[in-house]
Image (cartoon, rainbow, N blue to C red; front, side):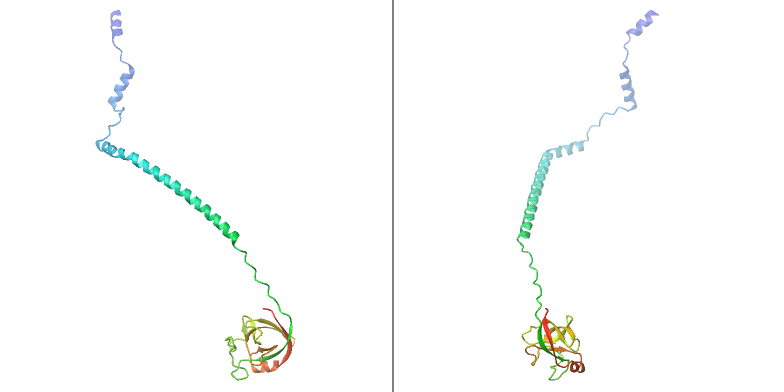
Length: 204
């Protein structure tokens, strides 16, 4: 019995780790990294010399982009300054002068209507308005005024208890001084108005 135990003691005991490694290799569970293929190795050899050049070009382009952004920011700042200076230098718009209403003046007023005869002078005013179509221009009654009242002057007339706002669009051989001729639609209306005294003033 003692001899048998002595033999076992002298036997070399295999470590457990060695046994586990052998089992894993047998089962194919321990996998060593595969060696690179020939094509991959050739590609790596071709790319490697250019990698540094590509990196340098990338850094250069990044620097160019940064410089361009800085220039753009500077131009934007200059543009803002120019706009502010332009606003300061631009004079403020002068408001149009207030309309000056003239003083009342006495006048003599007659009436005329569109008709093709020597007395009425036809149905077309000196400014080309067709009285057959309308007696109004820009909402004002068309009147004939003396030469001292410019065309397109708007006047307010008070005569025979009524107020007429007329615009000067016509002249007349007998319309002188403070005489005015007011348009009417027909002969009867004009004759009914006749010749009257009143007053007038410029409002535009």
